[in-house]
Length: 188
Image 1 (cartoon, rainbow, N blue to C red):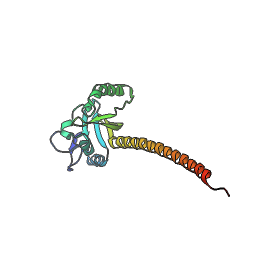
Image 2 (image 1 turned 45 degrees about the horizontal axis):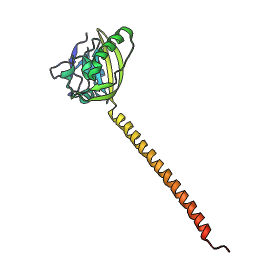
Image 3 (image 1 turned 90 degrees about the vertical axis):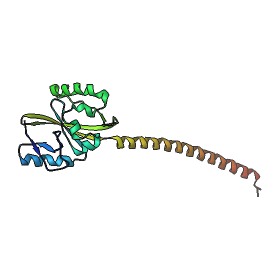
Image 4 (image 1 turned 30 degrees about the horizontal axis):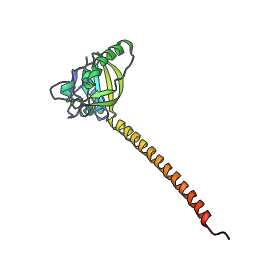
């Protein structure tokens, strides 16, 4: 198993509960390879082959509301909507045995607020360690935008219907006016 090497960064990936930042590495070159992961705008959760959280990125800390000390070593289910926990354990076991992926699409923050998420998972076989990286994107803003567009579309369809009725009324009025004027006009 790779040793854990402390970093000097305040925002590195943490995998021990002592408040220090640790990144699994054997040498400084590996350490430099892990550093860019904290600059990724999406949340990153590194999971062991036992389904426990190995480390999380700064973006994941912001997204889920947990400190790294609170989640490292916990089952990754802590980050999922409670009804999905049991399912996730069976999905994870099935993935380990068959390689079949099943993505759970609802995350849960520390405050129990749930949110839709896009999840991309990759596997990393390191010497003496099998890890999974989960990149997580909060889809709340996108879903709210889609909902707002649907509401706006419904309003536009109603407005278009009202405008069509107003046009029809105006055309009927114009025809009636033309008939009236034709009937009262002097003929020369």
